Structure formats: structure tokens, C-alpha cells
Length: 415
Image (cartoon, rainbow, N blue to C red):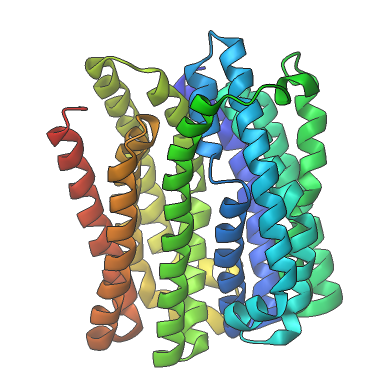
């Protein structure tokens, strides 16, 4: 599967996902307002952490080793057996704790015990969340792009229907519940689509537990858990800092600008995971790796520059279209957020080389360093420049991240 073909197929999925997210954003903005939007951001960060814990944080490893062992089906099956067992054990433990501590989680993340029902629902549906993520990781590693795209398209449509329905019926509480059950429904769709392939058989997921492969997957667990903890936590701390210093409406503005970045960068970031992670995992020769990297940049950099420029010029229309007039105060956040997005995409492609080559220590160190620096930069810049300071912090953080990735790969002679 070539980069262009993968990008084209993935674009179909991403366009549909973007359109559904635009619809969801509009509904949420109208029903919950800027302050409610900040709560949704808190929950999404919490869900991201808990989902990674529940899957054992190994899905990147599942994709990597499924692609790496493309010529050795027995080894692929050993990877799936180990990952399935790790995921099942992890998800049962995490679900139990979410159920027991639902009141605490509601107060800590959502500032109100009234929303404990959200975490109770999550505890019962988390197993389907985790297993769906694993099926998608396998489809990605097997390079079954058509099936992968199908699942993502259906998942986007399900998210739209469930979120709009529950937000309309139950307001903010309904929207929060929708966020924790969407992907659970999609699991059954993923299994149905994957079952059409000869390799997707129950006996390939059960049998002898290969300890050596499990240890290799646990390397990715360390990397995944680090990212799952420190990145959402840094966002929670930043959001809390903004809320306490400037009010929760301002925190909602930051969440909104972050959501815009997430939506328009979705095409690029999904290509990174769908094409480059399996591709970098296959490559053994430095010259070939460098050529693949340059090919990626020749497509990605012009794309992100063009998109970010268009968004900046149309920022006022975008705010009203995606959110409401109540969010127009966020227009001053666009410039440096978009510049930061450019640095982010360039540095992320280098980061996928670290993941593909399982450079555990370097990945963990960079996650810790730049999550901390983002928070510290935010505290520093917001104290001098107000809310706009958070976008200065974001831009500077990813500029430093890019430099760190480039010089680290050069020093290790990977490039």
C-alpha cells in the first residue's frame, strides 16, 4: 500500500469523521456553552488515560509487531494471543476500580458528584472500548486499510448519532455519557468486518502465552502508559490553571481551539499511524528510512501549511460555524496555535521513528520532558500575556520538541 493510496483511502474516513465531529462540536457548543465545553475536555483526558490503562497500553506494539512479522503468521498469532490476554486482565482490573471510585472520579475530573453515573457507565463498557482498539491495531498492522477505513467511518457515524441523541435528551450529562460509550458500540462492527478475513479466527487469539513477545509488548506498554498519564494530566493541569486564573469560560475557549487543531490535523496524524508506523517498522536500512521520511514531509508539510493558513484567514467564520457567537473571544488564540501545529506535525513524524524502533527510554523521557515543559511554559506565558500565553507555550514547546527529536535521531545514527 503506497503513501498516496493510503492517504487517499484514509482521507475518505477522515473527511467523514471531521464532518461528524463538526456536527458534534456544534451540538455541544449550543447545549453546554464554553464552561461545559471545558468539562467535556476534562472527561476526554480522563477517558484517554483510562482507556490506555485498560488496554495495557500495547496497541502501538500490536501494530508494530503485526507489521514486522508480516511473513511469519505464527509469530503474528503469538502477538495477538499475548496482547489479548494482557488486555483482558488489564481491562477487568481498571473497570473494577472505575466502578468502585466513580464518585471520586466524578468530583476530581468533573467537579461534581452528580456525574458519577458517567464513570459507572464507562466501567461497564470499557471492555468493548479496549477490545475495539485492539482489533483496529491488528487491522492496521495487517495493512487492511479498506477494513480499517470502514470501521472508522461507521464509528464516526455512530458517535454522531449517540452524542446528538443523548445531548438532546439529557443535556450535558447525556453528552458526557455519549463520550464514554461510543466506541463500545463500534466494537461489534469491528468484529463483524474483521471476521471476513481468514486470519481473524478465535483460535489465533488463544493458546500458548509467549513470554518473550509479551515482554516486547510491555516495552510499548511503558511508552504508552507514560504518554497516557503525562499528556492528559498536563492538559488537565493547564485547563485547571486557566480556569482558576481566568475563569472556566476561558478554559472552554482553549479547549475549543485545541479541538479545531485536533479536527484539521486528523488527516495528517491518522496517516502517521496508519501508514508510517507499520512502514517504519518494516524498514531496516538507514538510506531507505531517510527516503521514506523525506517522501512523507514532501506531502505533509505543504498540506499542514495550506490548511493552517486557510483556517487562520477564516477563523471568525469557523468559530461561529463550529461553536457559537459565545466563543468569538477565542479568535486571538489562532495564530500561535496554528504555528505550533506546524511544528507538531513535523516533529511527530520523527517521533514515529522512535516508536517503530522501540526506543523506550528516549520516548518516555521525551513524553515526560515536554508534558512538563508545556505546563511550565503555560504558567510563565499566561502570567505575562493572559490567555494568549497558552498558545505561545504550545508553539515554543513543539519547536523545542522538533529540535530534540532531530538531534536525538542524528546522535543515535538512526537517520
